[in-house]
Amino acid sequence: EPEVTQTPSHQVTQMGQEVILRCVPISNHLYFYWYRQILGQKVEFLVSFYNNEISEKSEIFDDQFSVERPDGSNFTLKIRSTKLEDSAMYFCASSVQGAAGEQYFGPGTRLTVT
Amino acid sequence: EDKVVQSPLSLVVHEGDTVTLNCSYEVTNFRSLLWYKQEKKAPTFLFMLTSSGIEKKSGRLSSILDKKELFSILNITATQTGDSAIYLCAVGRYGQNFVFGPGTRLSVLP
Image 1 (cartoon, each protein chain N blue to C red):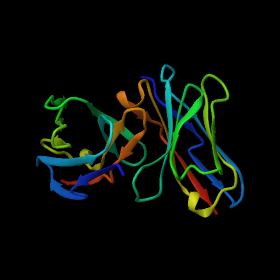
Image 2 (image 1 turned 90 degrees about the vertical axis):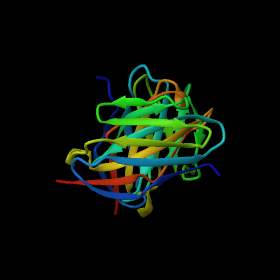
Image 3 (image 1 turned 135 degrees about the vertical axis):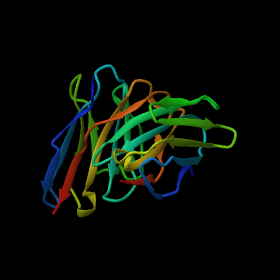
Image 4 (image 1 turned 45 degrees about the horizontal axis):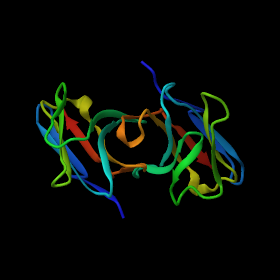
């Protein structure tokens, strides 16, 4: 069964460093998302991506964040200069039809900023 | 501001009990409502609901949507310890992303 994959599963970085989180969405899906979940808190939307451009982003997704689909399969989230408060689980998700379709999550990357 | 509310936030039951989890929403441009189960890591998709009154069923789990009263319920019958998880409700909006509720933490005791 197709699934969303994410790498790495856990990333530890120092404050101020850049990190890139990687995702491979399900192959026939057209809508891609990044969410984060701080430990014990709710899932928060970061950004959605469709047709090679950002379709929506939240207030959390400031200039420190960027997304890219560098080739036909990968979808990346870059945080340019990490802060302590960026420590969270980051989930990638994909969907065939956006809000009209089922959305599937990857296993997540736990980011720890020290 | 669009919001999704879930109740109860936490629930403890014994194996064999039946539980009903609630999700109510206030959103513009409603398109769909999704239920997820989150155990240790990623949310696992359970159901997507788009039409009122049509029950979706999978084994012991079932869900229904009421678009007039703006809520959905998720029922789990004959609960098992493996049902222990956080159950998330998310609402999709036309041309926009999904808004998630805070989740209901269900604990099923043996």
